[in-house]
Amino acid sequence: MRLYSFVKALSFLPLVPAAVISAQQYPITVLHEFPNPTWLDSSAVRHNGDVLITSATTNQIFLVRPRNPKVAITVARIPNANGANGIAELEKDVFYINGANFSVATGPVLGSYGVWKLDFRGTSPKLSLVTMLPDVQIANGIARMHPTNNTHVLISDSWGGSIIRVNVVTGEYTTVMKMDLMLTQPGMDIGVSVLRTRGSYLFFNQWGVSLQRIPFSTTTGEATGSPETIVSLMAHSYILSNDGTKAWMSSNSLNALQEIDIVNRRWRTVVQNQTDFITPTGAALGRKDGKDVVYIVTGGGYNFATGQSVSGGKLVRVDVA
Image 1 (tube, helix red, strand yellow):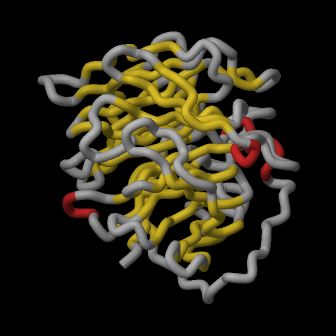
Image 2: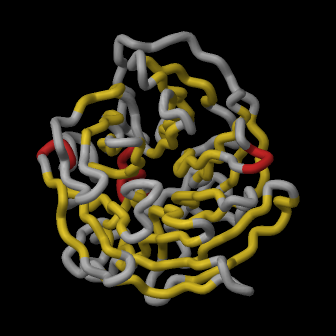
């Protein structure tokens, strides 16, 4: 979740790691602009190339077709929630989403978080509750454990400094990782955020601080070793390349997208200070016709304390090849 922290984010100075390589601007295309104000939070891409988008300012789940992006279709509304965070596909056309109620004054409402299943396999999308998470403070990032595991997802608790494993069939959940590194870091409002898995590694970002990875059991979700820092930078959301050698990281307080060389632990800024790239948030890889594309959603500069925004959130295509 980026929304709670954005109130302070613009005052942060960026970290300056040594392993920075020269910048290159990648071309961007705005596919769709949502009404002002709309803060878009996370995204995922269906097998047919359609982009699913969550929002921190509405309980609607949107679908945009990149080939015909003029219309954003509402495919579901999360009951008893005013926003949603992470979204991940567990099996073909079956997605899982975190949704909750949020207050600007106090942050997320404890006990309001739930995990929801969005199933596109029928004649129309079907939304159903998997489980409520009454003791989770901020259910944020969500990821599958392994490509062959259709039963469990991992979810980050950004205030609790932990990762939980959820059985999407039974609704049972348990904490599988908890460490100081995942807690809120000095000067930030949340800790562990977006989760991705690649082989026997779980990747996570410390919000606004760094990209990390840790070896883990793809059976239990528990750590099997110590975390290691990939890069230190203003890390808000990211997506891994298909081969796992790169990542693209959004830095919403810098209006920037960084390309990370995971193998050599270096990064470069590939999009920054674009008029149409204000507060980039969630990142997703293109599929089908968009395999050399990263889709970024934005918050439009929305300020949750004042309700003011520069523009509506946008779905932006970044050509990375």
